[in-house]
Length: 551
Image (cartoon, rainbow, N blue to C red; front, side):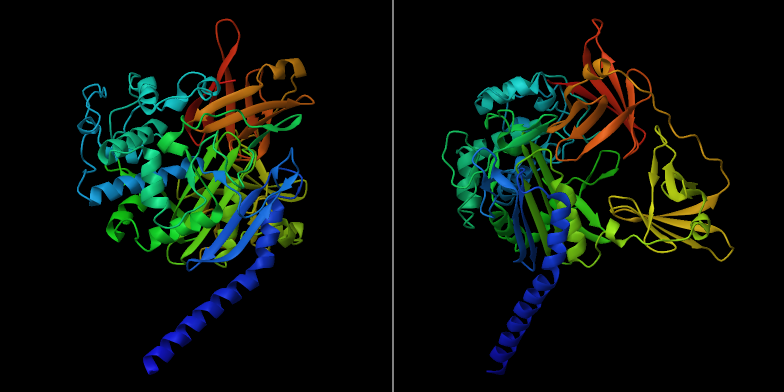
């Protein structure tokens, strides 16, 4: 009797604590969401926050259909895009636990005619994007290919004879082809279609009743319309045959069904805890270098809290899910416009939920110029970065030495604590015992910088270009599979907008080279011999990436 009373009290305490937690955070969560979604007549999102497996916050904002003027509701169904990959990965791991495959099996064991160019490509390589196989979303004109219906074998034929990008296990490169091949392996081993396998063995098993493989012809209750944003306003998203993303991005769901899925992962409903550990803790390349991507999920660190995450971006859709392990906290956001940065919303909500909220401009205080000047100088950080803190127009600014030497104003939260305008990057300054100044640069982790004696390089200067010249660069450029940067021009100003992120202005250094002020990046447009724009090269963080023009 006493034991039962104790259990009842514990359960009551748990329910009360969760309810109080939700009540105390609702206003704060609402404020965060409103910072990102302030137009009720624009495409919107559904968002859910769960603690200990229970919903503590659920919100729907914006419109599910602009044409019909229909408000978003929490029950709306969205394309998951690349969040699909975690379902595919878990299906493969289920088959591994059943003894039907080993992650070290070569893929030719299941797809004998697949050309591997004499290399051994394993299931493991497909799962963690290290196969070297060329991603099919980077071949040809994606907008044209996306309109065609393919059988699974036709889709594989589309990319299988392409040259490999690197030897298996030598590098990490996000790859949709690998997950299509995993879908094929699931079909070979199960004797069923990928669609049926996922729906029967995962969705039906845990009552994900509003989840399914995407189908453009099927009538789906509460399915949202998908949108993109152009200079003239919102437009319907480019058409996508749902045969194209397949096991890499074809599934659809709701925020409530996604909580059922996360709870199933947490409770080891589908795979053992030891198997899940392989999926969520990254993996290693051949040389031992650690990469954050595991199997369908990537490592995540939020202000010292560890977890895992995955996002998705597809025509007219932006999605992101975060799970923090020790806190048993899940945040999922689904948006019906590729113009929205749903990842920033979910990350901000997760930070607030664990009691470490990102500061906002409402938290900025006034600090005297004399006190600001005490932190002026150069700092060398543990990761090798050199940042210069200096006064500009009576305010404190920061410049990281880079390809662009981009300058950011930093805003005081106190005499020694500062934030960047977006709030997800902070500085904390102090003085060491020997009197030297020290700066802690805070993102998802802390990076300590020590004062050094070094002159500040000059900030990059901009020039003005004609509207006619800028318009030559308008178009969509694929930087990575399912990650497109759209270049637009408005009133002699040129802008870039990446899938699922906000729009940012570019500034001309010369006729083909541009830089951003909101982040340290440089873009150089590349021309053909006939003077047509074929791509741009992105310079960021010491790396170069080419984005091919697809429209």
